[in-house]
Length: 431
Image (cartoon, rainbow, N blue to C red; front, side, top):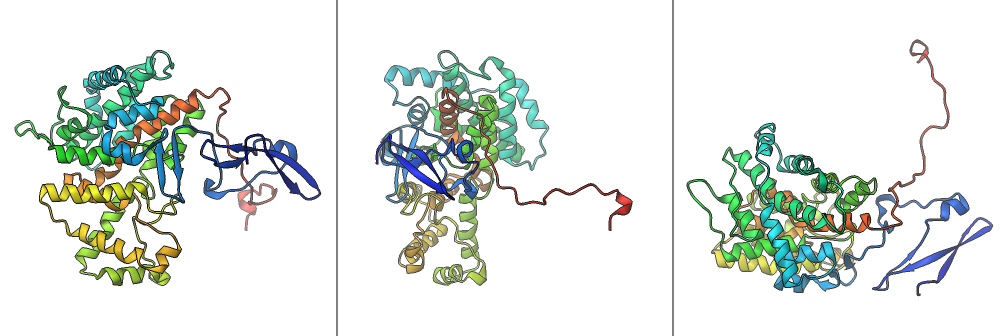
């Protein structure tokens, strides 16, 4: 099949010719944008599992073969060789940065790493036990009020400033929300540290005890952030694009992405995986027995960290994180029993026809939580780390949609299944 080919859809005794859309990797879609106007009929696809909401040049996934590429670059190469800032620039602007471009982007990140001193008072309005994701979403929205010229950045002038501003300040806000939960003072960023070590410094330093992140810890977190930087039209990226389609500003749009990511089926999945492993450990349950219970539908036990909406093969991100997890714990001299349980669980599941036939393989959440745990990140901060990593992808999707001259406000249709027409009855006549 090629661009220009068509398909014929027959509804009753009428036929409708619809064009095919073919991607650069051979993906084929049927363009149904004129279907309702032609026939009065719409398609129904609960959860949009078979619906292409847009054409995008940012990320390619082949779930059958376990392939993930950012702007054409294999995720394996980026995780091994690129910095997070390089990867962010690639996603947002389409190409790996030249040295001058990378230097300028890093300069902007450094210049924007502080938050306005007045914003420190916003943290005081949250209760001590406020979830960091609630703080993060609210504070990102508030950021836009401090530099309104960047609310609707023009491509040729302000966009790189707005992108750097959000990417840089999100670290500072995230670390400050963690410090608030501990009752500790907020730690200022350091100009001499790069993106990932600077975040670790703000998380773990104290006024009387500076924290110097090791290369091993910084490198492990770099990989985690790169592997979470984008993943095509997932729930949060689609949310950012939908909110942005109303011409909502960049800050409001990515703040909506934080809210979407907060859900346990999205950004909270690695926390659920660690909880599952911890429960197995605390109960002294045998992994084989746990797997048997997972297969017993009446037990209603769910295996977290396995399976994916898109991947029907081993998640390529999980392969990278499995090795990164081994390396980090070895270098830190940590023996985490949860990693032993995770490895045994993977071994048992991948040898079991129940999981093999259903193509349930470890996903990115299976090992990322153990890495964050080893670094010292508390579980309520897991989705926040996900949001920091995903920020470049959200910005890239907002920009791509914003630059599309044919973009329209998103407005899905529905099939109504409620009551047919009925009439109001006064309250004293209702029975």
